Length: 348
Image: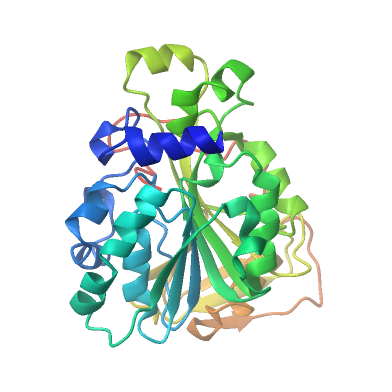
């Protein structure tokens, strides 16, 4: 499958227009604050972008960020602007043709961004074998990935390496494709469906189990949208399976509990995160309005207090008394099923 993917993204696809599903989000669905950053990315880099969502979490100034499956460098160059000259972005991709595009425009981006030095580097390698690239343990604040983990034949190895590379309190923030059931062999082994990010999609519950097995105890869904297979032949070959593009954030925090437990805690958002003065959205179920008391479970408390978000919140309560399971903690499929235009979660 490595060879199938390298051929598909290195040779068969020439621009994003060649894709045959709606796995890619268009720029019109991006937050307004990101569009000026995207406008500074070279046109060729943009045209060779094949991701399925945004992978730009807030508060990256000065951070060291790893981009898994960086491709032509679109997200890496947006992240470069967000981390600033004090930060660094490392992109890893196994496709030489894509890396050649990314590297060719490196000096151009440095000049456009007005940086005195390069804060982006690209490395050729496999995301399952990051240990072979000389990347040190606990050396990244944030790891991102844009519709790439599903392409890996060894997702266990990917999650293991991400956990190893993250600093304590660090975050894996990534978009990918998931299925509403386990994908059958005939779909999983179809080269075209695999290249279109469908054949390698995990059943969403299997993904949650995988993440927890590798130390990410409480995966948080940020956004999701259903995927439409617009090619009739492909749709027939994948009939009966519901696919979703989704963004998750996984925090490296020891001792997170497997369920959302209620300790009577709450937070108050100070409204101080750039471009988020009115509200801070941690995930799909935690849209926190500024200056209001917002009840949270113990895990959410720790995701805000023991990470780069701490200075932007006031914290109420402690872990001294337990009140049972936090209301609304469930186990049903978390993705929206509405495929109508304008449905919630229009882009991951």
